[in-house]
Amino acid sequence: MEIKDKDAEKVWKKILEYVLENGREFRDGKNRICKESLNVVAIIEDLKTISKPMEILHSFKKWVYPPMEELKSSILGRLLSLWCKGF
Image (cartoon, rainbow, N blue to C red):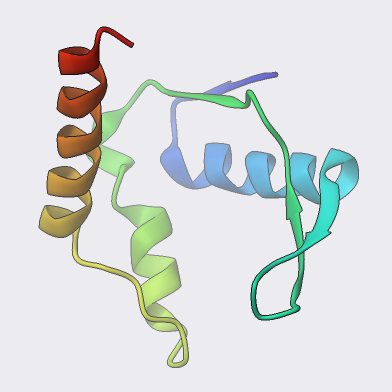
């Protein structure tokens, strides 16, 4: 599934809607009911809006979300690790 829009917030909301409607339910290690959907591709045309979904998550007082720099480091580290292994 490919979800595309200029605005990151719109893409994020469309992905959440897709997962809620089509996702597979499972229980995590803490016995919480979760949903996941594999192979969802997000295409955001205007990268200036990329931080908006994270700002929304940060506005929830009980939600602990890592800072952007930590996310960048984590994602780039994983990509580099995969690249070194030859995918």
